[in-house]
Length: 471
Image (cartoon, rainbow, N blue to C red):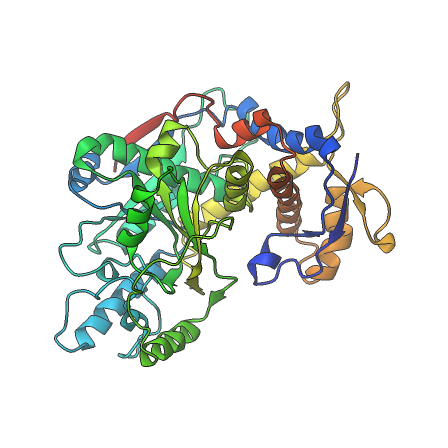
């Protein structure tokens, strides 16, 4: 069969709706449920047969006993998924310190996360403090720790950059089996695996701290989030989750469509302050699910632990957040979505350190492996996919063809002509095309239970094996 679709002529743009979606107006048919499901199970099988999945996850911190003890009596932590931005984060923390030093009374911290004086840059700063900056949590006693989760190749870069900031860096990697059969230098990374590691860290920390850490929830942030608009504070959302008549798996907010320049965020903050909106909102707006939970969110770690749920590591280039939410929608798993609270992000500089380059190269190798597998001929005696095929809506784009050919010959020459010949760009677009197809299929309910379980419960009924390491 072939999936009817059109090309996204704006693919590769700065908006979220453009950045990850090479296809447009995908047509779904419930009779093709086995085909959509195979797109997911094929990825799981590829990783599992190579002995990449179902391997222990190593979580590295400076001192596990220290961070376990530090959770005693604390509120839910702020956990940040990051890559290639350690210097920008450090610059933001310095900007916060500079701003506080210039304020009347030189306070040690801002009033709360919604105190927009943190972003107003009144002392000539050129970078915004991220929202999870320790000085932005609130005055002492803070009772809330901050963790930044990075792939192990960037661990030393981050620990050096963020030393003495009050932030704990967590490194992660899946252990390689001695029976590893993946192509050379291919290991599990990508968007889904990064979020998977962050959630597993939260599960492990909560279990290790036991009753001394009275939280069942944890906050997840993208590393360049600088503000939540109309935000009444962390505890307001936490209390709503705790007080819900039915357990909610998460709480999300209206994601930003793009990252803004520093000057845009600074000017916005100054305008909000001048209009009397530079502080914490009085109350939560009403939750209005469904919605896309991304960029900043509160997660029910107790629920995810009990049900062995997590983000799907098979989503390497896009869709790791939307796929999980679409799964909640089809399974009637309740969650809060606050459309009245918005996320603001900032354009950042990049480290481009050796560790960052290694993770970039590893992701490109993994993407190339997936792209090749998904465009290969159907195995003898098997059923497609592979190859993944599409039937373009526009006649000028030709008839039935492989998705990979459609991406290379029809999508990229129109949407990204200057980079259309770049093999890494081609492989990423091919992978994102498959991921985009599965997102809609999950949301339509056109994916089998087995395929969804393989995606969001990668170890079945068992918990993920974790190895704690000090370094």
